[in-house]
Image (tube, rainbow over all chains, first blue to last red; front, side):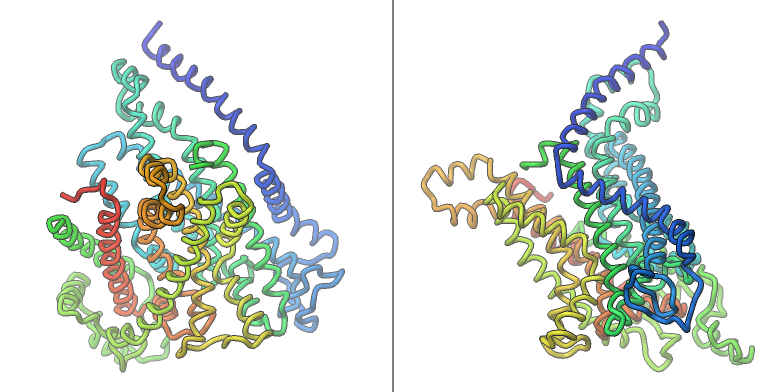
Length: 302
Length: 305
């Protein structure tokens, strides 16, 4: 048996022990009624946002950009369940389309943030010493800066495309993950399996990526579920200021901004996008809370 | 302790250097120019304008000049508002932004800590569940949804408070509420978590064992340690409130600094963008230093060396 094989065995048996942890967590999550309900709401919202605009356009022939000025803003009716906006466009289609933008940006930005944060935190935690101090001090400082100002500058400077928005948000949203992962790695690296890997001659990068990072998955997932709603919120914040997705493509933030400007006369243009935004964030937050309780039962009472 | 504060103050220098260099680079490497919107200006006039603000010089020279002025407290001229200096604009806008932020933070702390204490003391009762559900709902309602809805209901339907404007105490209530609620919710959760961690510690058991009334146990023994997570959250919260006020100032038409910032980035008003970033950064770094010192005073386990 070669050294590599032994390492593989160790890794596999680790995974086998881990799977029962995931199983337990899944059972705990399913018992949490609020989290399960939030999961269903989220699944419904995501499906509606993904296929909804297509169905609406196939059934009623609406799309998000064709204007009908003569039609004007109309209150909700059977033809237009959410009413229509100032330019006579079906608001349901626009809200669903905006929800799709929000969810996409939220998940992609959170993925970018989780990736950067995990690698950064694992390297800092494993390196220790001065490298760790400098890296984490940088995180402390970044943590207290009004980084949305930097995002605003970035987005204005580099152009207002969707990809840039989620890259910019992800690039500044990784700090919490880095802190969490570093803490985990600090305690993990003292454990016997790391010592074993090191005595087998595994390189530092191998230990970080093969042994340490997989074992931080639980906390990373917890942080991820909390980052998604935060990123959605910030994307909406940017598009509320007119810095996100550009017209005629709708996003929830931009729709809320339009609605806020004309809410006195056309209340539905504020209430529906705002309501969907709040519902989406609420479902994500309650689900994230449930995931945290399920993966880390100690947190529940402490 | 004195040494710690001194070291932190010294650390501020490289931090500020990085912030100034990074924001200068970001702002100046951006395509576009402050005079792009006035397309029909003749080239001579344009050249004269650029010479006036020093934009015709090489970048490193401009940077040197900027830093030189910055060290004397001069944030430079505004290209969008030629008759006003950046110092004047910031002096105009900052009081409103700071007032709004302070009100929002006070509201968030009052409500958040109260709800958190109730949740921890009455753990797993209806009170606890109600407080924490309210907190999760609060976290999910962004200020730019809450703000307009408040205006619609409280101002326009019930006529209780003015929908916009600035000046009296009545102008600050709705924006403060809209801006602070999301932080109240986070603080409630942090307080509850912190208090629950303390509740099982030995010194709390001792305090109870010697027959201290529950009220005193909470106020005198638990609160100090239980609020530690809230104290360390204050730094990021203040940064986030300052950013969030951009949107709230826009909704309630408050003459703060936020709308200037967005306009200034659009208009490439270089010195104004830089000025706001620099002033904000100084403010936040100073506040964070205060927060860290307070944290050390609250937690006897930490010694500064």
